Amino acid sequence: MRVTLYQAIIEALETLGGARHYSEVNEWIFAKYGPQWKSCETEIADMVHPERGGRNNKTSCHPIEKRILTRVDAGIYSL
Image (cartoon, rainbow, N blue to C red; front, side, top):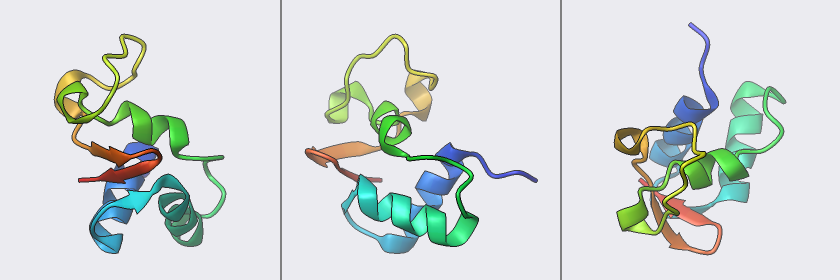
C-alpha cells in the first residue's frame, strides 16, 4: 500500500512527538520515504482545523473532518 503525504505527516508527528516545525517533519519524511515529495509545508498547513489555528481555506484538498492538526506557532504544528 502506498503511503500518502497526509499519512506520512501524521506518522512523523506521532514518532517525533510534541509540537514540531514543518522542516523537522520534512527531514523525518525524507529520511524514511526518500524524495517522493518536495516539501510538506503546504500539506501540513492544509491539515490544520480552523478552530485550531488553520485558515478556513476553501481550496484545501482535505475535508474539515480530516484537518486534525493544531498550529502552535509560525511553522510549528502538533497532532
